[in-house]
Length: 117
Image 1 (cartoon, rainbow, N blue to C red):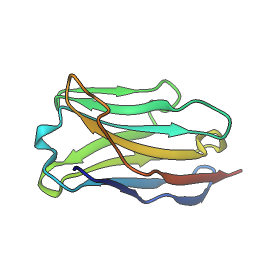
Image 2: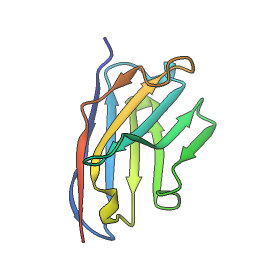
Image 3: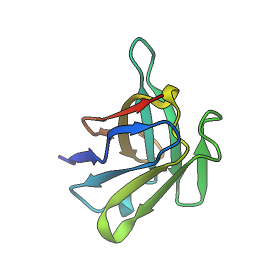
């Protein structure tokens, strides 16, 4: 069973930065799709950023130009660098990994990000 663990969340002031990490218990070379999602209180979970087959990157419009997703295959870790944080970025952030056919096969437990205005 693959385990995925997020870290790096916390409380930050508006305009600040955080870097989230997502470590897998196995090699992430086999995962064609890795991504970050978030869920704010009372809202549906939304896709924030995603890497597909190491060549295609997707960002939600709300985070374009502020967030950057990356991965380090040698460390089996996916990152989300978040700059220029806004209060509306407050949410629980989840990492997912999977294949083309099952893009969201594995999920972490989530890490809380709170942005104070």
